[in-house]
Figure 1 (cartoon, rainbow, N blue to C red):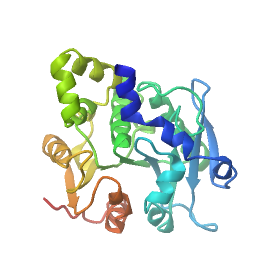
Figure 2 (figure 1 turned 30 degrees about the horizontal axis):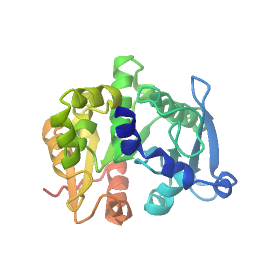
Figure 3 (figure 1 turned 45 degrees about the horizontal axis):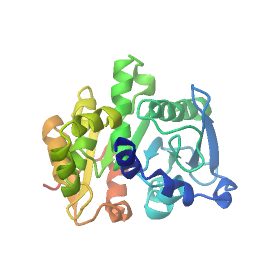
Figure 4 (figure 1 turned 30 degrees about the vertical axis):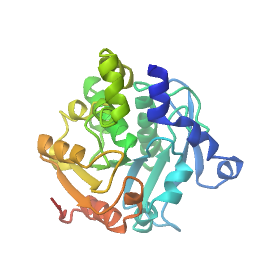
Length: 272
């Protein structure tokens, strides 16, 4: 039962189906080696010409998604046009990345992205943008960095969380079907939490709330916006609500412009 729930939560099969040979041949398609010798695919989007990057961003997509899906369904190109270098990885098991998805091991995928940007560009500050599942992976990574005392080298400077959740278990319990299953099998909630992890409320305990920026659509029927409200209240992070759903929020140009403004130091406009 747990493996079935994991497949439903991650929806990895769609990421493989939507990534083909054409994408592999693109100039911005690269492969990065992790510390456990897995090869993960990624898109490296750089400013045009010889423009020196304004900053560096690791962007983490959601479930059932590939790096190609993320680029085509979002306005992340706005950040590239403003001079940012954006690295979009596919986690192990997703698209054509090697390995099998595992909550703890995906931390090595994210760390490999930081190492790549540091090695190739001598990046001193790296920011992170995450959507849906990507926000949970981001928070899990921050907990991993803190737990292993890896220091500021691998720590994101600012974190932008789009359609975030408090925990995977909390999201699952939003479903009537999952609540019924949990009632019939009381042990399954704890088991799911142990297997999947992604307790964002807990993993963000050591992050400065001033470095967290939350965005959520009030029409989101996958992850209701009260998740971001709870995270905002817990950590004093700023939250911006908009009239969007779970997916089309990624096409909100104001959102991407806000990310740019907050990285560059301009004021953040919250809407509660």
